[in-house]
Image (cartoon, rainbow, N blue to C red):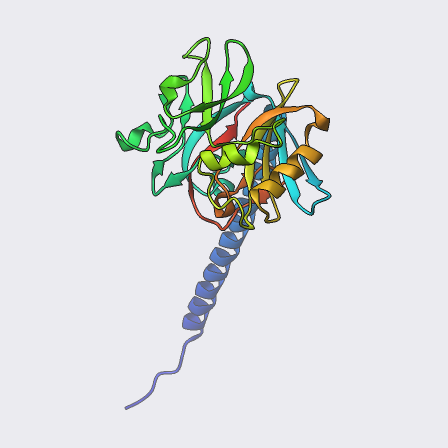
Length: 274
């Protein structure tokens, strides 16, 4: 059988096909490059928007007792409570972790304008009570623009001027200004793992009504964490505050820093929204 040789025409066809494929590849590469540039610009725009719209100051403090604190300083009017069921650093929302939880159930009071923040899950663990114990609850009274710490079991026990203008975050009383009595009160409120070396979170306020959302980078006992806050935050003008959920749940996110704890999801956070 006689074999046919390749004709010049078939060679030209192969060259044309290779050229088309090369053009397609180059086109896709250009499109990918433009997409990366666009995403980078959008990220920069989002960061700029964050800087322009959110009212907070981020700073760190290294206490003389060895604890390093990360702090978001703001006003309570710029803060809300929000269910996220995610790690704070993955939520894209500026703030810190909130109250105690189990699974998807919130075991601490978490209220905004008389509505429990985790109400979508049903009847239990929705944020309308500090489960099992009367515990220190940080309350912002929007009508009076005042912060207070109230020990309560149920959200219905909280005292504010206008129940449609407030938020309340449950935790454990810090009893600032009561150095001889705070540990006993924390024990009464069943503060978990108070003696162990763990990451810690807290929310405290000063005489001017400034709110400090605090997460430790280093581990320590509850007493060591409290001492670090008293010695490092508020220039000696702190009024009171609460301990929040800690250890792997101690999480913070802002444009300046991201502290993921042990990367676990948390049910709820204190979020800076203005």
